[in-house]
Structures are given as C-alpha cells and as structure tokens.
Length: 336
Image 1 (cartoon, rainbow, N blue to C red):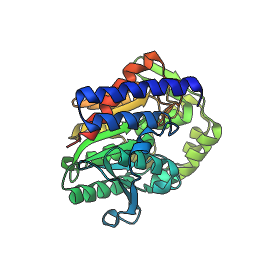
Image 2: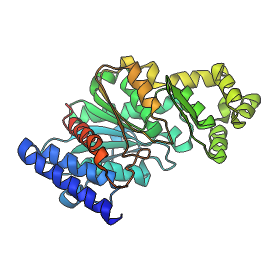
Image 3: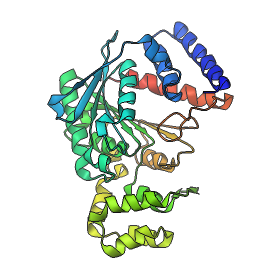
Image 4: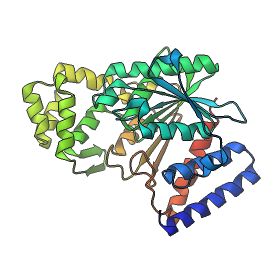
C-alpha cells in the first residue's frame, strides 16, 4: 500500500476511533475497525490487532459442509450465515474464511455452508437448501433471529432463503454485497456485457473464455441451437433466447430470481454495491430495491471493485460513503 493510502486510512481510523467516545458503544468502535480492515483488504489489520482470533469448528447440526467461526465477545454475538459467491472450494475458500474470521472478530457468530452449485459455476434452485438448513440450525442454537450475508452471486440463495416460509420469520436482516435481482438479466450481462435498468445502462467487455465456461457449466439446460446462440455473444441472438428460453432454462431462471420473491422477505434488507462493479452491474441492486422498497437500504459506493475493498486512496468525496457503510455495519451488529 502506498504511503498516501496508509496516511488516509490512518486519518480515517483516528476520526472513527474518537467518535465512539462521544457516542458511546463498543459496536461503533469495532464497526469502524472492521471497515478499515475490510476496505484495506487486510493490509491495515486494525480489528485483528485488538481482538482474539476466532475458533473455526464444524457445525454438525447444519450438515457436514458447514463451518462455524466464533470469537470471545463482551456481548452475545449476532448469529449470521455467510453465503459465498463462485468458489470451487466452497466454505474452504480462503476469501470466505478471511471474511468469516473478520466478521467473528466484529461480534458475529458466523456459519459458512458450502453451496454446491456455486462451487461448480452452475447455481440451481436446490442450492437454496443449504442456506435454509444452516440458518435454521443457527437460529435454534442461538435462540434468536439470524442475519444472512450473501456475497456476489451468493446473494441469490441468501435472499431466496429469506423468503422461504419456514425460515423467513427467523431472519432479521439480509445483506447483499454485489448481488443480483434477476437471473435472466444476470445471464444477459454475463453473455453480452450489456446491462440496463430504466435510463441506467452500460457495457463491459467480458473475456470470451468466461462465457464459454459459463455455457459449458450449464449445458444440461441448453439445447444445441441454444448453446450456439449463447456462445455467439451476439446481443440480438442472446436476447432472442432469453425472451423465450427453453422450458428447463426458463424454470431455473425464474426460480433463481430474488426479485420474484422479494415481497415475501420479512427481514430488513441492506443492499451494498460498487458503482464501478464489472462482475455484477449495480443496476441489479437497484432492481431488487424496486421490488421491495420498504425496510430496504441501498448503498452504492465507490470503495468496492466487486465484493472487496478497492484498496485505493480514500478521497474526501468517499467520506459520505464511509459514513454510510459504518452505519450499515453498526445496524447489522445491532441485529435482534
């Protein structure tokens, strides 16, 4: 990290560390430290320097592929399920472990299930089940409502789980970080690079190899002619397929679209997205907020690339984003 970046972050940290003295509350302090360490991608380990390392243990009650992270805390931790994005190693992905440990240090009791579809690059409706089972087991164990934190495409299963009748009254909050609302629009973006919502629109050039991998991973849903159309990356041909998809593809796209069930979610929604996100366009967060505007907070910020801190210099123009994120972390720490 360059010296100006370190200086800016240290100035920010000093600002955030003084405020809790006036406002009171350990959560504000740990929330500030969490944010600095997260946004610096661990290069400024403020929270890790002042908290005990969390313990990682299997969570048998939720299934064989769930780990739980807990750290000593001054107050009862907030139970939370962290849903990873595309990660071949699932719960064992280093990024998932790093995020879970940081959340545990900030006062969360974190369960991380492996999501089979997200390990293979082919999300399916049945991938919601591990989230539901893990959240239900954690809620029973802690005797209180849980928070669901969905990262990237993992926000889909998190949001869909929060709408499940047997779970939704046990979910107090859902965080979507770089998530999506419409599976159809997400596929359109993956294949063509185009996104649009109302007057907001744009285009990103994608690596053709990523498109080939995506189509290959989902070949079981596609007929030969459909595969050829999607691999062409031709916008008109892709739009034609998505306007009238084959039955199997249509069913999966509908089942995996959180906007379809957004109104059934009882929990508070905190939707965070980077304005310059090239992996999932920010319009997906706006689309989801439009589907469930009540008790929904949207934070579009310039401090993220996709689901990680950009790691660049903190500018004066970013201070409003930092304050909003800090309050968002504090609200999540206060989940009941």
